[in-house]
Length: 355
Image (cartoon, rainbow, N blue to C red; front, side, top):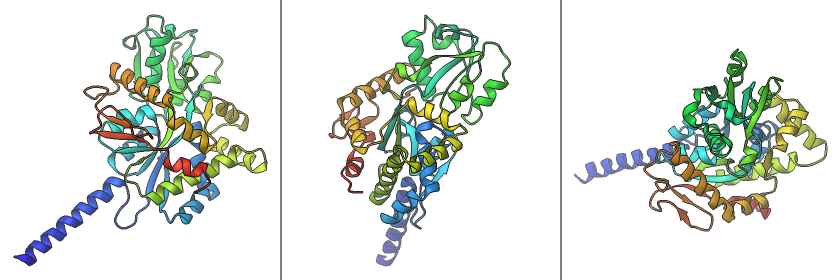
């Protein structure tokens, strides 16, 4: 009986440990922590980081097994939410209404930037957001683009409501072609850079609302599962800020890095510089840490969660359904269901030169 019980307990322990590793995105066999990223101006550094060897250097330094995987935005969210990845480049709104609300305990490891004109609403043959009424708009629906559109309609919509617009849910990888191939004279699109710049090159279109009208609300981050190993977190943060130091410099190395990112994004160097101008990048770790610890972040997250709930994007029973924890330990929402955590520990270590 004792032998049987010991075997049973051993089997249970193996199953338990396997489940833990599956949930964290790291297997018991030492499979790498997979970090998902997609096309966006503020996330292009991930591609350069891999190609330049910066990520490999920091992974070796911290003995971390990390790999990057590029895909369309929606696919990356699905991969992270399902447990196939331990990290993802994602916005504050999307991680809240998706993985966090779905029960994935997530930590905002790096606050990389906030969109300051990188997301926009573009109309063909239209002058204002009010001209959106009765149109169909290409969009990655139930995403940060929907949030941007709804915020625009509330602020300057001219009486137009979301019910007055037909949203055509389109994958981010296909959205530019779908808009360009639509011959309708009143087609519209809601998207982000570099896709936004590609469609704005048409002389018959006009951007009628953009994220500079809601500064700080669309925050672009690297989020990891909270139980991701410490050495992986250190490697990712260390690699990110070495990359930031390179691309924000003025020498030939910085020029080479930015040109690589431009080509990767399908843009000219001049176009990529224009996109960076509408991206409020936190190149310095100290600035990112200060932003993450600021009272303004709490006010922003409260606005994002309440507005998203009001508009049906956040499908929890109430805005308080998910607890959001901040660096000072305070929790907004349900303290017994904390699923989104802003943690400045590793970024602060980077600021102090300790990574």
